[in-house]
Image (cartoon, rainbow, N blue to C red):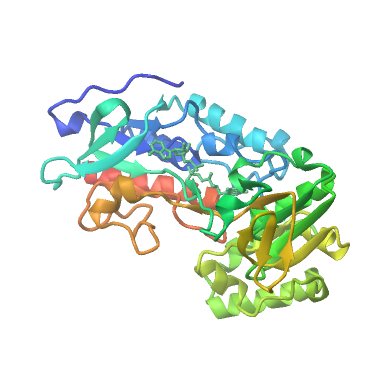
Length: 392
Ligand SMILES: Cc1cc2nc3c(=O)[nH]c(=O)nc-3n(C[C@H](O)[C@H](O)[C@H](O)COP(=O)(O)OP(=O)(O)OC[C@H]3O[C@@H](n4cnc5c(N)ncnc54)[C@H](O)[C@@H]3O)c2cc1C
């Protein structure tokens, strides 16, 4: 049940709810786990509905993690979603999840800054939110999303580019680009899938600018999902997993060196540890092999109608889609608390609060090989347990 009511401040910390900042999967799962332990949790969501990130993803998107391993605690996704749920199914699921568990969600409230309440020793926090609100929470869970703010590199000449330019976060469907010459920049999961979507929707030409060749894995092999393998191997030594992945890739992924996508030099799991998730194939291998997606060098800048590539060539696409990722955007919220590392990521996550910031928890800020949704669900249980323990 969604509610529009924000609890009144009360002098007693014991009567303050735990505030959860963000009504995506991470925030909803945390709120449910807290509620299941008898702790009042109020989710503050800046947009008008839960699951806002998912509502804004492109039309073609299906989960690359399985339905079973993407469900949040206390409500499995229905079988009718199939093995790889579609974007709209995910949105429906998140709405249903909040209702099913009777979560208290207040929408249209953006939290801009967190400060310790009093000396902060008891783990209480003051949240500064939309409309000058100051809310006191007995603890805070930050679940504002790893993919928070679209990131566009500061390319020279971009301001003067005369073609169409958009970040992948604004891309909905390739139908808008039918008959046009499009350059996709960046070959993460999003860039790879948008290139395929453009081909399928009738773009006249699709090029994909690649700086670092990605690891490409089949989403499933003989019915066995790549996610299951990832879960099995994730605790093994990194070098061993790198070796296994190399062998697996030789068996299941064709050599695309001639098309500009050689196998990477660095191991798959080593890359994951640096935050680079492998690309799950949803049509890229075939499109590259058939020449429908042409791989070109990285983008170095723009000059009028031209895009300048790292190999010295210049191309003139009608449109450029920058699939160049996101930043966490946590600096305003918690940057002053000394809880972020030099990449802007929380120094701890899940059930652990930073040493100097008791009562402050983060979820969803890792890129696990085993699937973010799966790990969010597990973190929710763990952090609710930690909060329950601290509350005595
Ligand atoms: C294209 C794409 C495909 C993906 N596919 C998969 C997949 O198949 N499997 C998988 O496991 N993961 C996938 N992910 C990762 C995915 O982002 C996470 O699994 C999941 O959405 C993360 O949930 P979250 O709650 O941490 O963040 P989000 O879903 O981003 O939710 C954060 C919420 O916080 C709100 N918010 C932000 N700032 C504030 C603020 N200051 N105050 C109040 N509210 C705020 C936002 O409006 C948003 O609703 C995908 C990501 C992308 C970009």
